[in-house]
Length: 335
Image 1 (cartoon, one colour):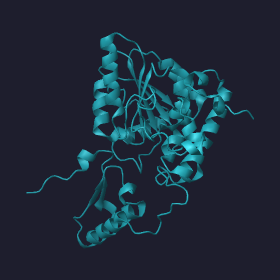
Image 2 (tube, one colour):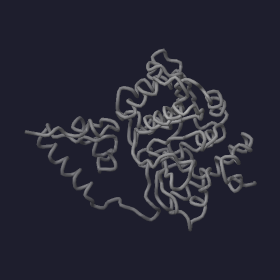
Image 3 (cartoon, one colour):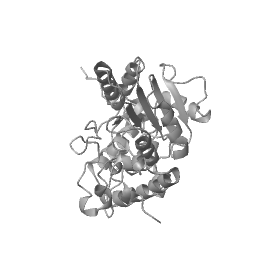
Image 4 (cartoon, one colour):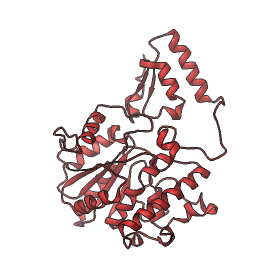
């Protein structure tokens, strides 16, 4: 079987392939990511779920003229592979040559240096306003998912993007997860939209005034590409809601979506080891047993601070997840 990945040096090479060849490319990229992340550690689940969407974006749009703004950017590995940084994923000698996040110092296909969440829509609004003032016409695409919609900055970005009378596309990667489970009322509507194939009358995005498109299988290039072609060069704020599988192609990450969000390098096993996180979690549980007013609050990053699924089960309603909203989780100062 020919290797299509070997032929990819830029997004222009992606555009030369047929749909069948793009599917083979997706398989090759997915296997490459699994092999590389297993060795180096990194964001396994988010990147595997975005393989096809990243290919489709570069197939349809014209980066770097058209600008992709990745939220958090922990799902940008396929984007990097397709934009001249393939050696960082195929050659072990260069595994650490590139950042795990977007970085304009690496490539003009990376618009911002990003490592935090709920920022992409607001950043894209700024790009769109600057484009309009200059009388230019490139597509601006904000890519957001993994629970980031529950961040206040994402809401503020949506609120402002909806007022544009020009091109602004939000690609909402809905994999039904944050790092852990999603929290927040908006996710009830996203669930309804999935169940109704995007046809529900109650639509969070339409309520702002966005044009809205739904793709049931966001890991299917045959479904993705026609929708992206339809919204390319739109003159209205538009949301493309794609339903994807987090960790697709990696059995552990498919089954254990929270633990598979970020994996440690092979041979690095912390199970059973005491850490500041585990000591803190155990201390909190003891306090909770004695005092029902003691609570633990997390902004969607529970596992990263030792608040494991087992901890959350034991804590019950003394554990609160506010979604990816640190400002809401921050305690008020006490007198």
